[in-house]
Image (cartoon, rainbow, N blue to C red; front, top):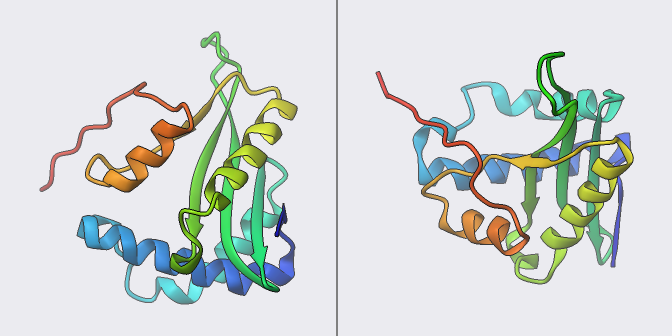
Length: 154
């Protein structure tokens, strides 16, 4: 059982998990579906995140396979805001066979520790209002309401 920082060699496995995350979210709302042709660009997006000095990617390995990942990035506020820096956890996915075993929590703990090292005053996540499992997961980890994001479909 191990959670570690991702390496370039993990990109294909992360991309596969990320694709399944898109599929899960698309079942909640079609707005979350991958664009046509985007699936082939997932590995490139993972590699960009790995190369980004203001971002971090972690993986969880079980039985020699990458079964979960988490991405986070530093966001710097404008000079007008009192909050100088925050971290956004952008993506987290755990393979269906390994859910409810604490991997998500381990990945979030790694991201929170990294956020503190970066000098962040808070960590932010976005979770769909209709994603009841995601809402419960984040709230169980101490995350709460901050800003409502409203949308209007055209």
